[in-house]
Image 1 (tube, rainbow, N blue to C red):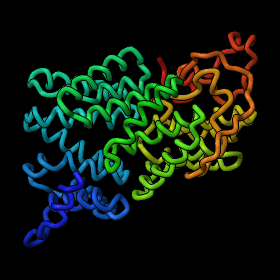
Image 2: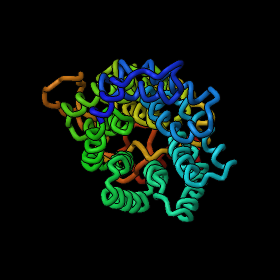
Image 3: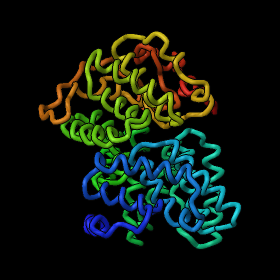
Length: 394
């Protein structure tokens, strides 16, 4: 990839004004050869071009999937959604089945991440039906949806099948995608060692592109709960670099939540509050729910409440988002390791252990802003459900 990008940068400029594909190739070539910081202005520009300007259908069909890479690399949620929505509708109207399965799958990812699981399941069914009829590759969206839902048996089956098929076909991106989905699933189930292994693999592949940076928050969370503070700090440094190029609420909110996991005292509260504020201005309801739940767990360990914390949640968040995350098992009661800065190499200092919470409660029985119960009283006390946090109902 690096050699191809160097060749692209050394090619003579096009005659006349550059077309959208020219801008896109320039931005991606700079991304691979010079890094995100230098590529960011080019990528922001080309993402807006593909999202907002009139581009011939033939050029859009060929280049819009690559334009999505530009948008997500700079954490531009609006351009990503605009590109995907336009191409999905265009392909439906034109009856372009081969392209339709690609864009249905892309919309499934975005819709899942925004917490509208019913809509995601609908578009996944559409993509799967088209894939079966045309003999094209199986869609990836079902893997992510199962991971976000915490559907362990279904997700494990889909992930294993996807990795096996992708490796047989030499499709490294699909393998990396599946590892990222597996890390989401395992973090949600409290299986941090497994999440750590999957997130590490996903984060180490094609570091210039987006799946690797999406894997970093999973890596940080898993590493923080397993005492791997050096690994968590290194990943936080990479995430800081990856999110700084966009300066969007999406990227900065994800960074703030990850930073909170590696902070102490007032710094922890500052970063959780910033995460919640920023993510509330995005469409990513599960990420906002995750920030609130992690913040609530931290407050409980501190024996505190945050005034207005629950009231700050938007109504749409209550109605729709239902992520497969926090308030997991007994090990979480002690909290993650001590504060670390990127580059900190000292060993972790364990925090005092609180009273144990019965294991296996998971997201759907997430205690929120409650002091840890005694083991004897835990079975009698009704836990606050995750649905109380997100507003979703079974």
